Length: 372
Ligand SMILES: [Mg+2]
Image (cartoon, rainbow, N blue to C red; front, top):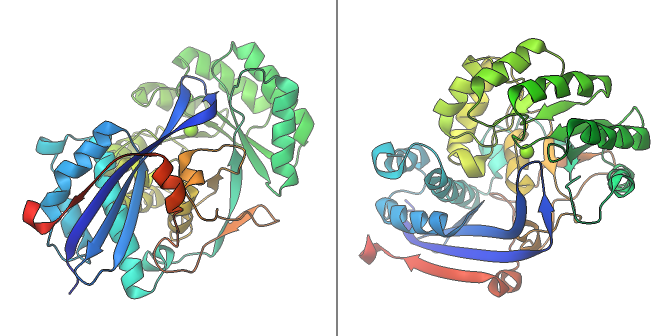
């Protein structure tokens, strides 16, 4: 029986060459908290999340709780970690739990020789993607935006995503119109407001976006505004997608049962790991709500293809350079038909470029049984 013998926790930070802006935030740095779990025989598993000093500290604090536990008792370990009274119900501490849980699934894959996709059920072997980009950037006008989207289409993508929400409605509509004119009618356009709108603005915008035939309208409202989401969904003008800022099966239960959402953007690195993601996927599937994970494609390719309700995968190409992409020996390749295939290697099948990571290391600590 393999047991958890050592947990290394590392925090990395790099600066974006050019800051990127969405409807609400500007990102200047890219940060990763990485967990490596090692058993007594030396087999390892890695898990990582986007995270800052708080996430790093939370992992260091929770990790000793699971030292010595059998590595293949992942639900038991999750239950030990998820103690709302101690760690909080939602938020950055849930990301810490996510990192540990993801590392355990990778470890189980390494142990069994199976990919995480196969461990979870292996529903399909590939899935269509949308290429995400279309950020606001200094000096980037409508024509540069259209060019960027055309580049994604040229690489094979049948769907592209752009940001809206930072400009007045009329100006953002011109940006979407320009992209529609550039890519034509056969390419799906997704728009993402990152929670930038009031309910009344979002309802107006949804009607206008319907004329431009968008595939979905992502996070028009803040994650807390469930009443607004219910109204938008009742309007039925466009497909409403959200969930990247929701946590745990309980949070998603309320999104889904509350009839606030058409497509779920669940993120295993945020909501509580792979164990929790699959519960969310099952619950969504029972309501016939498709799931389209948010963020990290190297992890989510395994999850979205493992379950029956998977719709589409968010995919970043080399146009958006963050630490999460830079740290990989090789990126998940895009097939010429706009799909991505699941890697067959054990676990998550991800190899890290340690020389890149070393450049961006902020702090690292290894927890051993004596500290538990
Ligand atoms: Mg988003």
